[in-house]
Length: 218
Length: 309
Image (cartoon, rainbow over the protein chains, first blue to last red):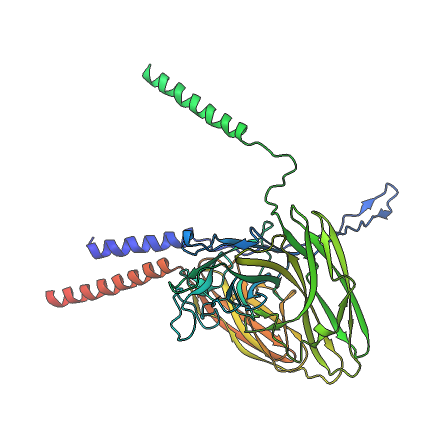
C-alpha cells in the first residue's frame, strides 16, 4: 500500500471518528403534559380534584460596591484600588451599568481643595469615540495632568479590551451590559481609576465624583 | 518496612490536612456569607403604563430595599430616559419630546432611611397634562443611595438604580417601522446558530418588535427548533434603531440546517431563510486535507501510468 493511500486511509478514519464523536443529536426533546389522571370510585364514577399552585417571583434589581471612595496617591502611582461594582437582576433581558461624572462643581474633573480653578481634567477618550492608553494632555492652556478609568469583567463592553482607559462624561456611558439575568450573586464589574500627574500640577487634595446607575435592559 | 512507614506518614498527613480544614472552617454567627456592607435594591424595576390619556392620572408603586449589612439613606429624583445607540445603551440626561413624562411624576416619599432587611414602598402618580401631544413617553425614577462618609479626596463612587416608566399618550400617533437588516450566517465553526437583525421605529409610539427563529433539517419540514409559540420581543422606542440577536443555543457541533428568521415591527415583516453549515474548524481542515490527498493520489497515479506507457 503506497504512503499516499495510507495517508488517505488515516485521514478518512480520523474524519469518520470525528463525526462519530461529535454530539450530533442534541435536539431538545418535546415536553408534553398529560391530562391529570382521573381517580375512579368503586361505583364507577369519575372524580378529580384540581389544585392551583401559585408562585410569585418578584422582579428585583440591586447594586452594590465594595467602597464609597477611591484614593489615588503618589505611593500607588496614582492608581486606585479596583472598585468592584456588583449588579443583581432577574430581568429576563438583563441589565445596563452606566457611569457618569457627577461632581458638584466641575462634573467630570478632579477639583483641587484650594479653589475651583485647580483641576485635573478627565481623559478625552470615550467609549463612543474609542479608547486609548492613559496619557498626559497635550493641548495648550490646559493642565497636562489627566485622570480616567478602565473596566474589567465578564459583562464589560469590548472597548476596554487590553486595559484601555476612558474619561468620565457628564452624559454617562454604558460600561457593562448583559442580555440575560445575572447569577444569584450578581455580575461584578471591576473599575480602576488612575491619574497621570504632571510635575507642574499644584500640590493639594483633589476630589471628584462618579455615579454608577444600573437599570433594566428593556 | 520503608514502604509501610511512608504509607503511614502519608495517611497521617492526609488526616491532619482534613482535620485542620474542618477546624479552620469557623462559622461566624450572624454574618451572612457574600452580603455586602451596602446594597440598594428595587422591586420591580420598571412599569409599562400602556396607553395613557391626556388629563388622566395613573398610579404605581415599587419597593426600595436594603439588602446589605448596614443602614443607609436614599433619595428619589427623576431623570429623562433615552437610548444612545442601536444596542439601547441608556442616557439619563438627554431630553427629547419623548421624555417630558419626567415632569409629570410625583412620589409620596422623596427620601428615607432603611435598616438592613427593611423596605419602603414608594407610590407615584403620573399626571398627564391636558392637551398633551400623542406619542411615547419614557423616564426614570432614580433611587440614589447616599454615602455615609464624606469624601476627603480621591473619587467618590455613588450608586443608584433607575426605575423605568413608559407609556404611549393617546392622540395623534403614527405606527410605522422598518426592518433594516435580517441576517443568518451561511457558515459557522461552532454553535449556537445566531440570527441578527436591526429594526427602526419611524413612528412616534413605542412598540415591541418580535423575533422568530425556526430551524429545519436540510431535507425535512419538521422543525428541530422553534420559538414560534413564544417569540422573543424587544421594546423599540420612537426614532430609534434596535439591534437584536436570536440564538439556538443547543445546536449540535456538526450539521446542515435550513434556518428561517422572521422579524416584525408594526406591520413590517421580514423573512430570511438560509442553508447553514455548522462545522468545527478542525473537521473542516481534516476534510480539506483528505480531498487534497485524494486529488494528489489520483494525479500521481495518472502520471505514473503515463510514464509506464
